Image (cartoon, rainbow, N blue to C red; front, side, top):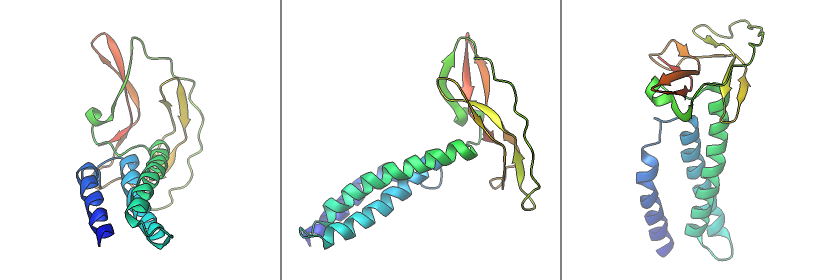
Length: 170
């Protein structure tokens, strides 16, 4: 009975931290939440079935490991597909420089046939990753509900400096 009580308290303490992320944030947040939930479930089962019958400890360790793994996979998806930011304000980063670094020469891409009706092509682009540019190849994607245009990453002048803005949908 004490194990169930501990599991409830652990879940209750994580609820405020995780509830704002579900379904509203980028893939990194959603991956972390999903990974933590699956990790907690797996950890609780493994912990409860082990010699010590410590489901709460297993759930806590599983949630931490699952959250990190899910966040990592979600972050990778963000970089591959572009995070679902819906405005320039959401997509603005903390990368601020006096002059933006020059963008490398454009790459030539072959646009493949549209896989399904309604999908839009996101052109490949050079994204800035803190210390330099990284090439993100183009791809087909079904736009999010109520969105049809993708704004590629770019630099915006803000006062005497430039701020890097990630790609976003409008």
